[in-house]
Length: 140
Image 1: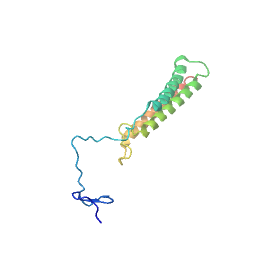
Image 2: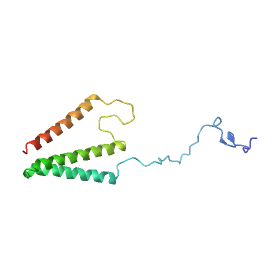
Image 3: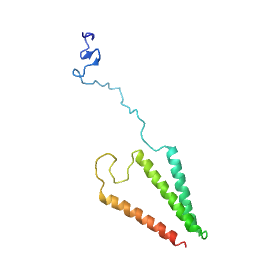
Image 4: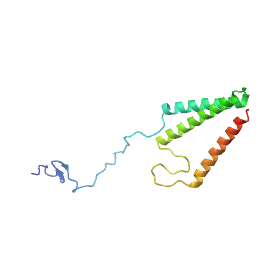
């Protein structure tokens, strides 16, 4: 019933026999190449994020710099909102391709983040938001 040619140990009609000869020979000239493309942000992902961030930051900066009348505070807050949305969009896009914040463990590693790094991020973001809202509130 064994139709394997003579001299090929471990070969069965259904394919190689896993129980015999599991060692793999590697040629020195072979190079192992990853078939999947590397995960990175593409230009079509970055362009709208950068565009929204630029528009939002300009909308936030011009009323503050030039005091454009009664609507300046509204335009500045709208610019701050658009900039914040662009930042969140950028963070989500970066997370999707596998990037992490500095000081935090890689996604899926099973490690817990250090609470001091998280506290530093929360304090920094809170201070920036408080300063921006305080500056816009002073326009009135």
